[in-house]
Image (cartoon, rainbow, N blue to C red; front, side, top):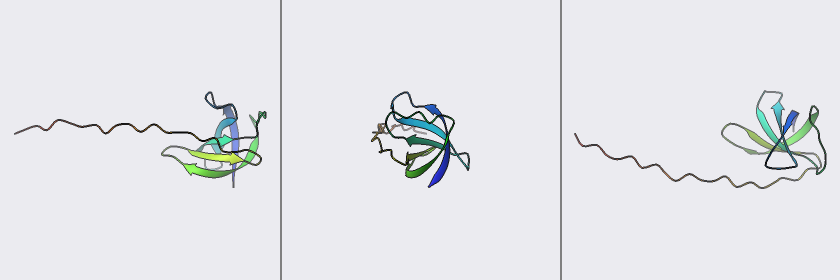
Length: 81
């Protein structure tokens, strides 16, 4: 469990807020429906790690499934000498 200070609401998910952990890591936290915990410290269980952030679930919340779009591989042309 990590303590997270929640700062802002997520525009794409109504029950997800963004904040910072004790180690100043960016954490997206799913909270119980209908709550607005901005400015509060919450205990969150980290369920997924991304390249630049973490995804957690606060007590009483349920994880919101997100799909990360895969980018097609970039193919570069070969240069001949």
